[in-house]
Image 1 (tube, helix red, strand yellow):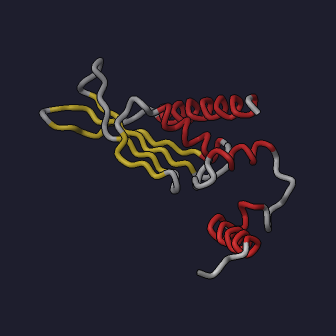
Image 2 (cartoon, helix red, strand yellow):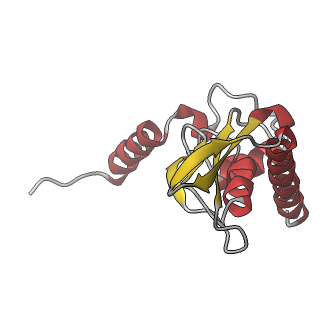
Length: 154
């Protein structure tokens, strides 16, 4: 049985780990003067294609609605139709798109759809233009709260 020298084993293990994790995760080719916020965001969700605070805030804000499609890499959240017990003849659906890795207001787009029940079927209805803006503001407010809580804990 051939013997393996420890330095050779260590070197091959290190090289394999470097190749598997990618050069950027150990600092090659990156600006080394990263802010604390960037380090926190990278540490929390290194594999997400979107801002983790906006993602989590979107899910928390829409948690009362059933989810139809969720894509954390593409930044897409699509809910199924939701009708409240107070207004069973109206139902709503939301689409949220997170467009950037930065926590910014223009990195978020929400669309709200409404249907009303009439004659046994559902008909599309107009939604107040301010409704989407209110959902976006609620998500942004929650994302800021999550960010501040994370920074304060560091």
